[in-house]
Amino acid sequence: MNSSRRNFLNKFAAGSVLAAAAPFLIRQALAMGDRHYTQGIHKLEGQVLLNNKPAKQGDLVKPGDKVTTGANSLAIFVMERDAYMLRGNSQLEISGVGAAVKTINLIAGKLLSVFDKGEKRIIVPTATIGIRGTAIYAEADPVRSYLCTCYGTVNIQSNSNPAVQETVVTKKHDAPRYIYASGETLIAKAPVINHTDDELFMLEALVGRMPGFFSPTYNKDTNSY
Image (tube, rainbow, N blue to C red; front, side, top):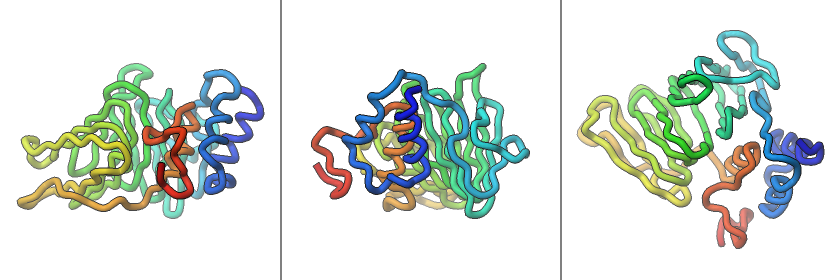
């Protein structure tokens, strides 16, 4: 990978240019170098465990692994052409076939992820979410989980009543949902919470893409076109 591109992405992941970087600068950085995207853990804050052992930057994360974060902690990592930001007090288990990720089980905590094409499942305590190349923000809770489909298409299925499903198609945070463990309404409208467009730009940059809502006329500072 071109060293200038690597330095840019390292600074971007660290947040030092996150708020100031304009979309055209991100696009310029992504155009540099080859098409190899560094796998594994890009950034750690606080206590991060990989398979119950202290993780370090550069460690690979693969199917069969478990990532756990402590309070006020953070892990940003790449698997193939998917990128993940796992926040504090979270537990994530990954399973698949061979090297291919098929299921991401967010047992506890908060996860922002961007995905390449291909079918995968995300499981939270109250729902199973089918995705096919999209971006999501999820919060796992045994009573009321949260899902924002930042862009793309997902199918949400209640874990307590699999007959209750909803297909969500969004361009930009259009239909966040709470998914309840019980009650008359299992899937309900929700606000956009706890994640930003800057974070999506950062994650997509790590795998050589732009967010699904990006266009040449998009102004990231004013959040408009």
